[in-house]
Image (cartoon, rainbow, N blue to C red; front, top):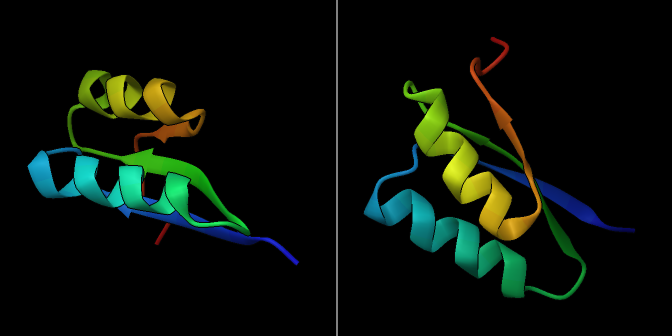
Length: 57
């Protein structure tokens, strides 16, 4: 079973979390959220994830 993870924020810590999730075996970085959708897209594209403009809550 694969763990799907998301990152909220694409600043320095968010980018680091995305990188770490991408390195964990059995983990998929599914989505990256940021208030600035273009920043979210940059990080998401780098790690093969979806950029989202809402946390869906």
